[in-house]
Amino acid sequence: MQLVCSTRHADVVRRLGAEQVIDYAKQDFTLGATRYDLALQLGGTYSPAAVKKVLTPHGTLIQSFGDGSRWFGPVGNIIKAVALNALVGQTLKSFTAKVTAQALNEIRDLIESGSITPVIDRTYPLTDAAAAVRLVEEGSPAGKVVVVLEPPPPRLPPR
Image (cartoon, rainbow, N blue to C red; front, side, top):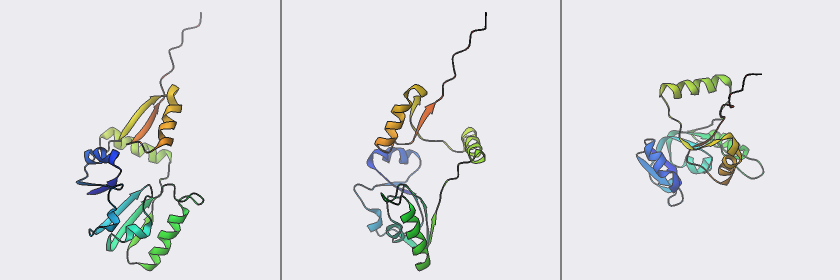
């Protein structure tokens, strides 16, 4: 498995099992000769047309879109993928997570069973939630940023 990420996240993705890590600041993987049956793009760094070039003739690209363009967000990449689908033998799909109670319960069960392990960059108490938000706004943390809801202090019994 190959993963493309920034230099600062390379150690994290190696610990997650990547056999090869490509630093997108130093190397453009879309210009290489390697072809892939499946590409999963999280964050929308590359256009669908760029990733399509490194897919095998019947390869699949699954995108979970990031911000996209300034004016239209990820809609531009969604439209590009739909248009390219009509023109190529490859499959270009988008994926959007649906946050439901059932989905969250399933994820909790997977975490509790040890089937998956979330990558947590930092944990903040609720009193430092503003710092957690700043970290997310300033750049891409190497994992999730967690705000912990601490239990309230015990109440004294009434007199």
